[in-house]
Amino acid sequence: MIAPWWQAGVIYQIYPRSFQDSDGDGIGDLNGIVQRLDSLAALGIDAIWISPIYSSPMADFGYDVADYCDVDPRFGTLADFDELLAQAHARGLKLLLDFVPNHTSDRHAWFVESQASRTNSRRDWYLWRDAAPDGGPPNNWISDFGGSAWEWDGATGQYYYHAFLREQPDLNWRNPAVQVAMHDVLRFWFDRGVDGFRIDVLWHMIKAADFPDNPPNPAWQPGMGEMHRVLQFHSADQPEVHAIAAAMRDIAGGYSATGDERVLIGEIYLPVERLMPYYGGERAEVHLPFNFQLIDAPWEARALARLIADYEAALPPGGWPNWVLGNHDRPRVAAKRGQAQARVAAMLLLTLRGTPTLYYGDELGLSDVAIPYERVRDPRELREPGLGLGRDPVRTPMAWDASENAGFSTARPWLPLHEDWPTRNVAVMAEDPASILALYRQLLTARRAHPALAIGDFALLDSAGDVLAYERRQGAQRLVVALNLGAQVQHLDLPDWAGGCPPLLSTIPGPAQIEGRALRLRPNEGVILAPA
Ligand code: NOJ
Image (tube, rainbow, N blue to C red):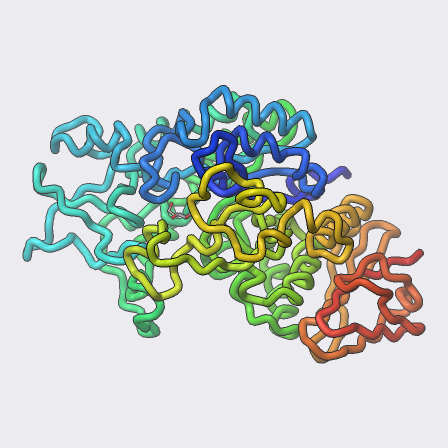
């Protein structure tokens, strides 16, 4: 059986403000992405997911949508989008958009109407509630960006709910008219030819109908950010969300009937047992509920082995796994694990069983960039400063070459570049066979050449110390992946069949050392072994 593209392929996330500026305003845009498609094809990825490009006041940099069916002028036009899609497809690259169904911008025409009066026909498109008897908010729900999740509207004398900024009112997905309107948005883009969507905060979409208080979080500490004061028992992950996801899948399925499958990926930050239901039960839901576990996992061989085994064991029949090392909201892998282990992490991401999502810049080993106070842009940082919750450090411009502003823009970029951009950039690193970029390319080439890596079975191997080892197998093809997660030399006893196998690839230049069944791993080394 041939695996569908979204199982065998690798997804690459672009944060469009920071990828490539084509019109000299210091902000990336769609034409800029077109200019860099050849570079992406050369890297060897299969699909691009672009964070939101829709019309937006940019209170949350595009996650506050004012018109779902248009492109923000900062990013270009609908015609530019069509061109990008055509150019991506011409190179064999799929293109996924970011669907933001939980909330709109407060400038969206729907909300403007909803806010106009209590009797407006769109009043019930959002979540309006009377004040509590003391005049305060209807319950204790806290915005993910800090503060009450309720905003008072003096003109109509009610509060509205916003899980994020007050400029991002939550839609009322219990209202069938909202469902119809948002389904039309999916169709609008599917009709243009997109290959799927990443769905923003899917688990937030339905709240408990009677809006009870959330329980306090006994483990809360101030450094965690205010949102964690309460446990989001009633404001997220409600049973009714599954019918919502299934309806979206039905729409995607309708388009998949002609041509390649259209894929849905759900952004869901939940523990594994609560994540799995989003694959669907009797009705299919999303193809890939994002698995973010590697981002915060303890970087320790036994702990990772357990995490991987538990995740594999929890998958429902037919559920295809996926893995993520970073995104536009979380610290970069190089910042968390260091440069040496960022290479090992790359090998892990691209050799585990399941679809990998790669965050732009991680292929350069980009780390979090310290943002001077006067250049902070992220509302998350501005609202709760100094806790390390801000996301600007992971959204800095991509570095393409050693020319002005790293080839990103002719103008001052909207966020500062990393300091070592004159050497940490695509052009320089592409010439260096020892660079992390070269390693990413080799790993992606190896995945393409070895179906066992892309879609094969997975089995952990016995290992000790800092070694995480596993086997991938597809038909007669078998490979061993052995990762040294520490900075000391480690040893692994290879299975009989792999004794004497030559290394296919190492994260460190120079030959891996194998004698019979004994593999010696250098500090911070990962290797893939394959029979000659
Ligand atoms: C999740 C997105 O990834 C994040 O960037 C955004 O701020 C929130 N959802 C709100 O849309």
